[in-house]
Length: 349
Ligand SMILES: NC(=O)c1ccc[n+]([C@@H]2O[C@H](COP(=O)([O-])OP(=O)(O)OC[C@H]3O[C@@H](n4cnc5c(N)ncnc54)[C@H](OP(=O)(O)O)[C@@H]3O)[C@@H](O)[C@H]2O)c1
Image (cartoon, rainbow, N blue to C red; front, side, top):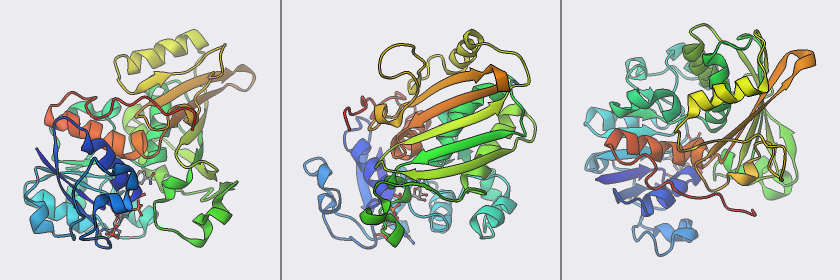
């Protein structure tokens, strides 16, 4: 199967190349970058030297249609046309931008500041979280890979909403994310001198991922769910931790929670439940998932305040981006779902 990657010089593009370079079922055929067209891939992604012998191609959509499947990994707003043209040409597309994630076109005006030019396409696109939409992904032609904090938070919260355990109007998502989440294009605030050592809140209200988390939780709960989200930039390169605060509407104990989480994620290859009383790893911590496609999930109950805390950790470039996208490719192509993704996390990092 021939695969192309658009935006292959970026951080997510580089992670896709890493995973695809050793994937047993695909031939990496075309990788694009406007800036680095003609350069060898390893000049921009030195770690891939010896694994990929290609040079970057300029962005030529007609040429990209020679592939069976194309990943688009460009900034939001820039994938709209590329995805539409590839889809219309019959190519399967997995888009890692936000351009086809939301079902309600009005949400694009509110959260992304543009009118969606192809609202009819939003209903054709399947939201790419296998743990939530595996059967739809199997038959999809357009898959929209989730936001990194969105997938991490959603995997922690989904079992609670599925079992009608929590107040659907008072959910607080407190997330922390490493610097690679902002992509490879530098700015004054992402420069090392300014970014190192920070615990920096940004977008304390109305972060863009709010829209997709609410969309997906509302589908699961079968009612309108509201979340309050505040992300923080922290001093990591890779990694996300979501501390999801919820308020119980039913009595539940820890044993029942184990049952609920195990019930939803039994057999899932990339979910690990982490809640231990011994050892150094008692609750999810991004340090122990980096480099892997795992989302680690834990929980605890604050009985006095009726609060249930669901903790979830992932590598933003893996389960938060390229790993989820490859998992979706495996499903849609009928490959073993874990192919190209069987990496243990790196420790120590
Ligand atoms: N970083 C994360 O943790 C993460 C996680 C989940 C999803 N995402 C999403 O994935 C996408 C890529 O993110 P990233 O972090 O990899 O960003 P990045 O490092 O800035 O890379 C962006 C890529 O897009 C290309 N590009 C930029 N403008 C373009 C345009 N107008 N047309 C075509 N190509 C263009 C760039 O190469 P050239 O300019 O050379 O063409 C580059 O290869 C974004 O939509 C982001 O929101 C990121």
